[in-house]
Length: 338
Image 1 (cartoon, rainbow, N blue to C red):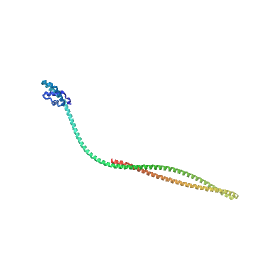
Image 2: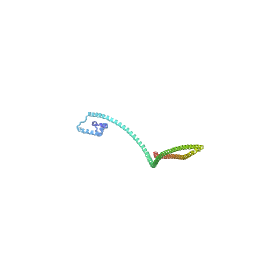
Image 3: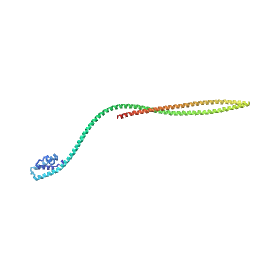
Image 4: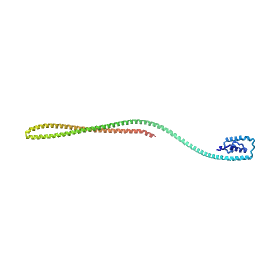
C-alpha cells in the first residue's frame, strides 16, 4: 500500500531535502527521508531519471540561496509529514496484521500441539489396532478353518436334506396313491355293497312274497282238505243211512278219494315247494349273513387302511419336521458364528 503511493515528485522532494543538507542523496538516504518506505528499485529509477535531467544545468547553475533552501526544507518537511500519515496508518495496519498473525500463529501452534498430541494418541491407538488386527487375523484363520468344517457339514446336511426330500416325495406319492386307492376302494365297496344289498333285499322280498303266497296256497289247500274230510264224514254218515246211496256215495267217495289224493299230492307238492322256499329263505338268510360279514370285513379293512394312512401321514410329518430341522441347522450355525 505504501509502495503504491511512491511517486517521482516525492523522490525529488526527498532528494532536494538531502541535497539541501549537503548530503549525498543515495537510495537508502532517500528511502529513510521518505520514512523507510518505497521500493529501492523504484527509488533508484526515479533518482536516475532526476540525475539525468539535472546534469546539463549543474555546470551553469548558481548556488541555491538560503531562502530557496529554507523553502525547499519546509516543503520537504511538509511532504514528509504528509507522507508520514499513510506510513503511520500502514504501520498501525501492519501492527494489527502482525498481532492477528501472531494470534493466528499462536492458534496454529496450539492446533499443532493438539495435532501432535492427537497423533501420539492415534499412534497408540494404531498400535492397539495393529495388535487387534493381528489377533483378528488369527481369529479369522481359525474361523476360516471352522467355516470350512461347517461348509462340509452343510454339504452333508444338504445331501441328507435331498435324501429326505426324495423320501418325502416318495411318501407323498405313496400317500396320494394310497388315498386314491382307498377312495376308489371305498367307492367300489360302497357301490358293490349297495348293489349286493339291493339284490339281496330284492331276492329276500321275492322269496318272502313267494313264501307268503305258498303259505296262503297251503292254507287254501288245507281248508279244502278239511272241507273234504268234512264232506267225507258227512257222506259216510249218509252212507250208513242208505245202502242205495252207498254206491253213489262210494262212487262219489272214490271220486272224492281220487280228488283227495290229488289234493294230497298237490298239498305234498306244496309242502315240498314250501320246504324248498324255506330252504331258499334259509340260504338267502345265510347269504345275507355272509354279506353282512363281508361288509364287516370290508369295514375292518377300511379301518386298517385308515390306520395305515394315519401312519403314513405321521411318517410324512416326521420327515417334514426332520427336513425343517436340517434346513434350520445351517442358519443356527451361522447365527452362532455371528
